[in-house]
Length: 194
Length: 368
Image 1 (cartoon, rainbow over the protein chains, first blue to last red):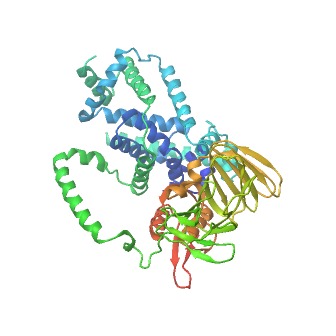
Image 2: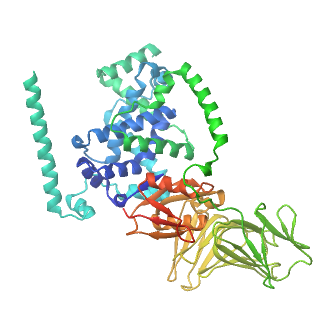
Image 3: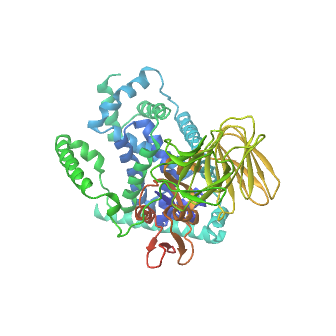
């Protein structure tokens, strides 16, 4: 049973901005919005329900655990898909699981399906994401279309949040400043210990 | 490449020492897998999505998932499962679902309806039967048992379901109609030459037999005209918009007040308001989920959810404070008790109390 609140009309970038400030409802909304898409994607790759559960759960638990340090450039969808990809790689590289995927990995090499160009692989992934979004039922799909903006301008985030553009800019700068301070104090602590 | 090389590739990934070519292999494998045609059933998908949702909402600690841990203890698991199954069997045979939870829980609706004849007399239809049909010698239940015998009725009939009722009727031309709760269907025992007309207040699902004459469903707001097709009409008096959803075939929808007409094709829905008709593509399963025994919500607001529950469980709805601005997505079986359904909503943050102090039970929705 999924229940969304007023955040359901917020653009992805706005949700991310709220998430980094510790807004748990924004986190839940991101899960509501992308959970199914990511799950289906993971299932196509892994085929195993338990593995999918682990992967998707881990992705979101990690995101919440490090929400203050999150640094999402570009589209949220791309970030999430890559997070899933990393967890998938983590999963299949476990000793007791590797066997299951060995055949398919081998056949990719044997059938000459390896794409050596990194940029082409990236492009292919983005195409896959768009295609998967398109396969969703019409009403859900519309939510993604509304949120396709990669870099939502400060003004637009402000409009979505009913907050002035200046305030948004200030808040982002404050957030960055805090992060910078935290990192530098962390670094000095680190150096102190060693 | 042999299995040993695959294992060393993955080991290098774990160590973070993949070279460009190896990374290309791994990522290309990923892309190939992603284009596979693997489908997962909706029910299973949502069950797991919900499980994960709970885990990430409560999970501050990282529970290394139960799933993989269970698999580890294969031998022990077999024993555990056997014992658990035995225990659950013992428990489930003792405590039927409706007794768990709230005292005096509110039971879901079922097959009930009243048939009113032209002379005004009313017959309470048998709940053990799900439907009735016109026969040559009167009206009979779906299995042939008589409701009313004598000459075949020639005049107007009216089938009404109460709140919490659902019933099916087969008309004289073979058209089958399923009536949802709190609905009334007026229909003639025998259709006129030239056209087949019924009127509906509430909601019904129609399977119209192909005929020479058009079949018309008339509601307060609209006329739906078909030749032979399958569709759902929702026209409750307390809803501002009447909806017709097409499952199969073709229909024409005409708004009485606006005078506008639209043709629907499969997968489309017409939303009729006084000033216009809006046509759009929908997930038809949503509109007819009630017929399959489910509530199905897709971005459905709290007010509409409560209305549907109110009709099926025959309870009033009250709002203590502002209506929560929440949207529900999910499928819930209609045979659950009300408190079971409300418990699910509560998980999503929608709090509803059942108040049985008055002469009629009511649901009180608490503000956010």
